[in-house]
Image 1 (cartoon, rainbow, N blue to C red):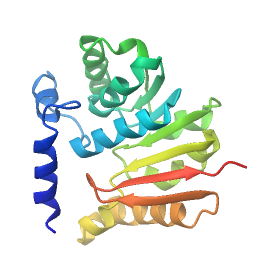
Image 2: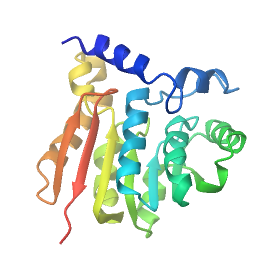
Image 3: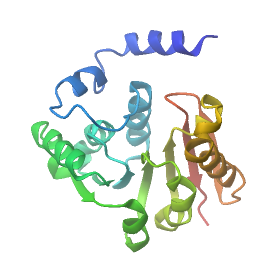
Image 4: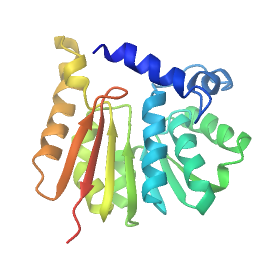
Length: 212
């Protein structure tokens, strides 16, 4: 099966459902920003939230807020909360504007700064943590703290975890391949997690923290 053809077919079926990525980007004033999730990942995030009803979500890597808005649409009906971290202040301000324009700002708290500095200071616990930070070297670095603040029975979600398959050249080895592969190995070998990687977007890891 050709995954690209399958993705196009599925996206066409759900064109009028969820948050349309193309329209979201076109309506955003800022045109230079990091990559954002694909629509299939957006739908999966919404579905997971609708199934689990998390009260408290942490997002690492806001960009212009497309994934944040996708999740906020799913939590607004029961007054859930999203805390999202973005290192680029200009991009974060655009995301905040997007949240305000869509009437979702009350459900979202934005922290502007380096996730490597912010997350170790967090004591609050979360039902879902979604990681899509631009610097992929941070994936394995942040993992222990993410698991510390993830509630038992909670979900750790991570985007771009099939980068080791997608990128083969030496120029990507240090930035993408090695850190993501290390992260994937740590997740797969952690006895306190049940996990898998879905081949949607650029690879979406779903890991369940076992309850003790």
